[in-house]
Length: 226
Image (tube, rainbow, N blue to C red):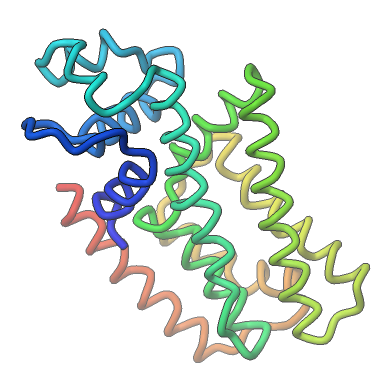
């Protein structure tokens, strides 16, 4: 599902009306997401968005009750794009390496997991108890999904939970410290990452196919953003 389609779905879930106007609820939400990722939640103000979109503030109230209603949409979009994608990556896999590679591919694909969105949400959570609770719930759900995956692969409960926590904390921490490595550089660590996080040496054929797929995904995403 594209970002545009996901924004439409999240927007429609909380729509007030469908008036015959040029801008939609999804348009406002999309603009808010861009501003949120660039400047943080404090920049997401009705007046600022109206200026960016070259409309009056009144247009906003056709679609949202207030600013909090819009901010709820930001949380919903993050939950659907980043957190839901993480959990979906672990479904319908029948061996450990395929599951780990599916997870890695999600985290490397900005069309499924947007690091900038994640960092903005976690920064907001430091200043909002409501958002902190939402982030904590989502993190717990993701770690539970990871632990359940490891248990399905035959690991005992404590080892499964330990590997789940280590894998999740490692990836979220990678983005939070602001590393921006080229895909080629990250691929260097793929084999050892599988050994450390998954406990198995990576099958060379799977490693080759994964790298080829991720380079293709990177090119496709670059075309879309360009």
